[in-house]
Image: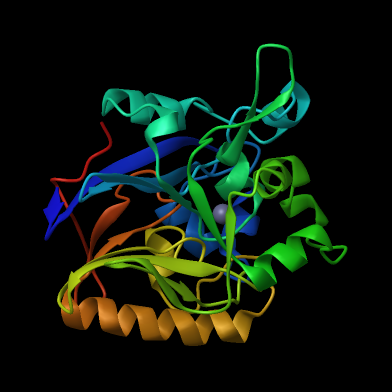
Length: 281
Ligand SMILES: [Zn+2]
């Protein structure tokens, strides 16, 4: 769909099947299972949703999903599906990976930055987007290299260190407009350097990729947070602020793990109106 000068395409870069308790944290199962019914292993279906955006001749990829590097055992355990989704999505739009100018992900967890790199024919690590600048918050980078014991399983250094070695990471300190109309807003909360990706044509015309601040439609309720959130109070504060702005300006929201209705609008009464023009290709 067109949003001012931005041509926005939904990207579904595959997904996986996390434990429902991981996804909805302190929310009792009797509440979340009505919205997202789990399978017999208590897993729910999560997508890795982002956007491919064209703007004044440039191509921006927002969120890259899990990618294709996980070994079979881990991929099977986590119920990974369609790991090729990122490249398939680009191909459908006629975009070659070396034509991508900018890559942004909301944070460096394996299910968001996994697509930064891939394995070449000989098994060697390669950059997926060898000509793109990748924008990362400095605090996220520092934490990803030395995570606390609980966060260790969330980061895979092979996803992002090759990008830095190639000199293609641009480090940010807080909110920044990295190209006209594309702002990255540091929220922290889920991880120290979690950021929102905001495409804005005007005050009232904007699209926000919400990352893990609002992962799925049930997470639109402020207290429904994820088990992995490091700073829950910060999540509550930033989510309240985002949802208030989004509903007041009727911003288009793209929820990074919603598998059924990932793009839409939050109505003043708290309900969700999917954007029919933004359906994964
Ligand atoms: Zn995530």
